[in-house]
Amino acid sequence: MATISKFSTTDDPIEGPLSHRDYEYQVRNPEGRTSEWVRFTYPFDDVMLEKIRVEQLALGRSLLASGKPVEAVEPMRKAFVFSDRTLGLTHDETLRIKAEWEHTLNEAALAKLRFRVGDCLVVKDGPHAGKKGPVQRLLLRHLHAYLIQPADGEPFSGLRRPS
Image: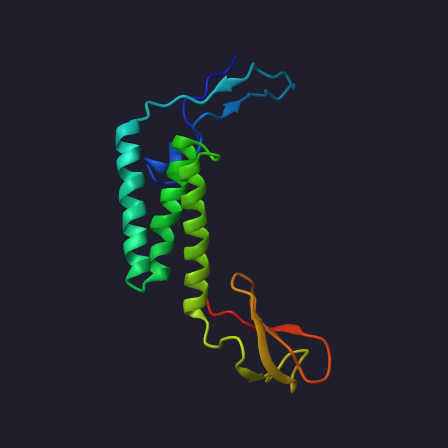
């Protein structure tokens, strides 16, 4: 039976191994024989992981509160990932942080948009060129961020979201 001495993870030396916490793996050789299931082990420092989780959560909340939602996305993501992998996905704190992260993602997307609901837009090119109408709804995490309601026809999504 083969022994795996290295495991492919992200470049982050702390978050990389954490993403595999509590996973089990099997090894299959070229002939198709498989090993028993083996739990991923790593010398996790739970005190340090909790400290990072709390710090990233505080940083994300602070950035969001100070009107910097784009900058808040990464610390909130990290707080969610650390909470998920240390407390569990169904833990109340993880669910709260996930909701905050989702809110942060929406605020960051909104911060990049030029138009708002009710603004009247004229489409300059593409399949809906020449059509105009008010923005009916914002599609915050879609490539085409605006749902436009033309005077004559069905609503359509248009205009690319800035990157």
